[in-house]
Amino acid sequence: MTDQSTGQSEPRSGLSRTFQSWADRLGLRTDPTIFFVAAGLMVLFLILLVIFPNQTGETFTAGREWIVTNLGWFFIFGVSAWLIFLVGLAVSRYGRIRLGDDDAKPTYGNVSWFTMLFAGGIGTILMFWGVAEPIYHFSQPPRDEVVPFTIEAAEQAMGFSIYHFGLHTWAIFTLPGLAFAFFVYRFKLPMRVSSVFYPLLKDRIYGPIGRTIDIFAILGTLFGVAVSIGLGTQQINAGLTELLSVPDSVLVKVIIIAVLTTVAVSSIVAGLDKGIKRLSNINIGAAVGLMVFVFIAGSTVFLARQIVETISIYATSIIPLSFWNDAMSRYTEEGWGWQATWTVFYWAWTVTWAPFMGIFLARISKGRTIREFVLGVLVAPTMFTIVWFAIFGWSAMDFDGIGGSGGEITQRVVTEENVPLAMFTFFDQFTVPEGVITLIQGLAVLIVAVFFATSSDSASLVVDMLCTGDVDAGPVRQRMFWGIAEGTLAASLIVLAGDAGLKALQEVITVIGLPIFIMVFAMAFALFRGIQTEVKAAKVVEPARGAARPAERRRPR
Image (cartoon, rainbow, N blue to C red):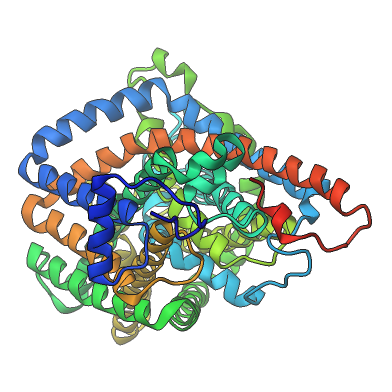
C-alpha cells in the first residue's frame, strides 16, 4: 500500500487490504485504516455507552475523581506553562519564522481570520456561560472568605470567568495550532496530529504509532464536540420553550440536532471559503449586535466603566489564578472540590478540543508568522471575551443586586440549576417593550444555532483532514459522513441514554483529556526542537537572509 501523503510503500496486512478495498468501493480518498478504525471505535463506544450508561458512568466517574484530585495541579500548572512558552516564542527571534514558504502571504484577511476563530465553538461557549458563570461565582464565591453578592464577590466572579475563557483557554488551542501549521507548512508533512511528533518519531509517524495517535485524536474530537452539541441543544430548546412554549423534551432536542446538522452538512458541501467563512462572518456580526443591544439598553455608563475596569481585574488576577491550586483546602470543611468541578474540568474538557481547534487554526493561518499567529490567536479572542463578559456578566450581577441577596437570574441558574435558561432569563430583566425582548431572545437562539452549525462544520472538516492528511478538502461524501456522525452521536445519546449518557460522556472526556494533555505537552518539546532544526538548517542552506530554500530540505528524511 502507498501512503497517499508521503508516497511511501508500506507492507499491506490482510486487514489493511480489506480497509483499502472498502475505501475503493465507497470512492473515498483517505487513509482507510484511520478512517474505518476511528469510525468503528466511535460506534462501539456509543453502543457500550448506550447499553451500560450507569456502569460506564461509574467507571469514568471514578477515573475522573482520581485525576482531578491527584493531578489537578498538573492541569493548572500545564496550561500556564504553555501560555508562558507561547508568549516567549512569539517575542523571541523565532517569532519571525513564517508558517509557509518565506514569501507566503496570509490566506485570509484579518477580519475573516478573526471571525473564523469563533467557528470552532468558542462562540457557543460565550453564549452559554456569558451570564451563567459570573452569576455562579457571584452567588457562590470560590474563596471561602468572600461573602456572596458583595462587590468583592462580583469582582472575583469576573476574574475567574475571564481566567477560564481568556488567554489560558486560547493557549490550549494555540500550541497545537502552531505546531500543526509549522510542521505542515514548513516541513511539508501531512495535516495530521502525528506529524507534530516528527522530530521525536521520524518516519514512524507513518506507521502504527502515528496512526494510533491520529485515531485517538479523532475520537477525542468527536466526543468533545458531542458534549458541546448537547449543551448547545439544551440552550436552544430552553430558548424555544421561553419564546414559543415548545416542550423541553428529548424529541424536540433530536429535531433541533437534525435541523442544525442539515445546516452544517450544507455548509460542508459549500466548503471552507463559502460555508464556514460565510456563516462565521454573519454570526459574529449578529453576536456583536446582541452585545451592543445589552450595552445600550442596560446601564451604559456603568458598563463602559466596567469594561475598562475588567481589564484591570483580569490583569491583576491572572498570575495568582494561573497558579492557584487551593492547596490549603485540606484544612477547610469542604476540602478539595471547587477547582475539580470548575478549572480542572474546563482544562480537561478543552484539551479534548485541542486537535480539532489546532488543525482548524492551522488550516486558516497559512502564511502568517509565528508572532502574528500567537499574538493574534491569543489576544484578539481574549479581548473580545473580556468585553463580552464585562457587558453580560456585570449586567447580570447588576440586575440581581450587587450588595443584595440575589435575584431571578440566580434563582434560575443556581437554585434551580437551569443553566441553559440563564441568557433568556437575563433578557427578561430589561425594561424595554416585550416585543423587543422576544426579538432579542429569538436572535440569541439563532446565534447559538449558527454557532452550533459552524462547530459541527469545522469539526467535520478537521476530522476529515486527520483521515486524509491533506490540507485540501477530501470528497464531499467523506466530510458529510463525519458531519452526520457528530449529529447522530449527540442525538443517540439523548434518545437512548438520556441525561445519564450525556453525563457519562462528560466524565469520559475528562478521563480522555489526561492523555491528550500529556500529548500536547509533548507537542511543545517537538515544536521547539523542530524550530531549532529549522533555524540551524537555514544558517547552512541560506546564509543570505531571505534567500529561498529548496522544498526538499523542508521535508527532512
